[in-house]
Amino acid sequence: MIAVNRPLDAATAEAISKLFVEAVVAPSYEAAAREKLAARKNLRLMDMSTTAGDVYGLQLKSVGGGLLVQTPDTAGAKPEEWKCVTERKPTEEELRALAFAWRVTKHVKSNAIVFARDGVVVGVGAGQMSRVDSAKLAATKARELKHSLEGTVVGSDAFFPFPDGVEEIAKAGATAIAQPGGSVRDAEVIAAANRLGLAMVFTGVRHFRH
Amino acid sequence: MKKISRALISVSDKTGVAEFAAGLAAQGVEILSTGGTAKLLRDKGLKVRDVSDLTGFPEMLDGRVKTLHPKVHGGLLAIRSNPQHQEQVKKHGIEFIDLVAVNLYPFEKTAGKPGVKFEELIENIDIGGPSMIRSAAKNFEDVTVVVDAADYAAVIEEMKANGGCVSDETRARLSRKAFATTAAYDGAISTTLQKLADGALPQNLHMNFRKTMDLRYGENPHQKAALYLDPSAGGRGLASAKQRKLSARAGR
Image (cartoon, rainbow over all chains, first blue to last red; front, side):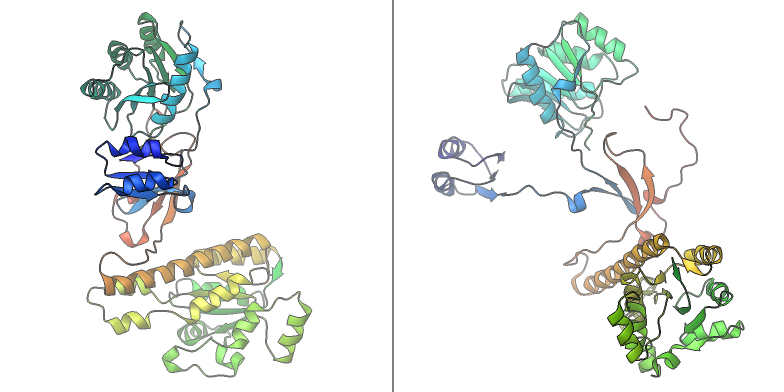
């Protein structure tokens, strides 16, 4: 499935038509793009012209005999408010990549670890019980797809409870991390990042999503 | 502040209603009532005027039509500060009703009975009650509407403290509660009838959940959250679980 956040043009349709894709969702399609994709059998094109809020602007999760109700997570990425906690500061390129990785991380099921470059997701670890397992999963999936992790950056939706997650990320080849901070072991985690030459920022915002 | 001079009391669940009516009567409020409620109040020695006396129309059709009358709804809906309303009310001999205490035929309870007959279900769809509740709730600037026995004591206390008056704030709060009650009631009727016809997945899903607890936060500290209970779950399930002990570590 491919989701596009702007009108889908002919060149993109051409590229998509070469892939095995079952569904495309976009705000709109240029006529040539629609024509190109209409020729493909078993490909569903979805128009999603507006972004809808959740029911009453709330998110509902059913539990036995009731509901858990919450306001949506509307916190945006604010790199200007991030705090660098390591000896090495992120480079401009790393910071751009971190901002992108952090935006993606928000939408990944917890525990979320996202390896990315500026504008490109390289590996995603989602839905694991432990953060270090998410890191391992993300790296494994990236390698399976022959994506290099050298020089990537990582977004983590919540703090690292132990240094092992950071060590796993460094071992995979990433050079910078964005994470909320707030663990009782932050000092150990920061020490590990310094030892491994990583740049790490605390976002001060958590993005759990279950 | 609005002074209560006349009250209409007609309840299916009679819990606490005699004490409430006595409290009103003690402050000089005229009590209007119907059927079983009127009988109960008279048995307790209270002076009660029948709604049929107010309307000049008998209760009829097995009680299906008792309060559905312009003299009831006019008395509830007339805007006291509106000169035209005043004039029309006078012309038609309508008397103001300042407080309504109504609770409804127990539709959900009836629907939950094993092997309940369809006819019994239909007879437990209250029509007059929700109509009065909605008229009173719409005109909350002039009328106090009480749909929950848990509010009886507070209303009497407030009247005692304020020379027989109920505050704007209380009337507004009770009005919101009244609309929530009739919405849930109609939702239950709609869902039950659709279930009977369509099976498990009704065409329109009307759900009623009651907030039982505000939570510290949602999935993240910047999200507000609360726990809601499905009243039809009968106190079963995780949502009704009791917390026996607070964690020694009060969060992170």
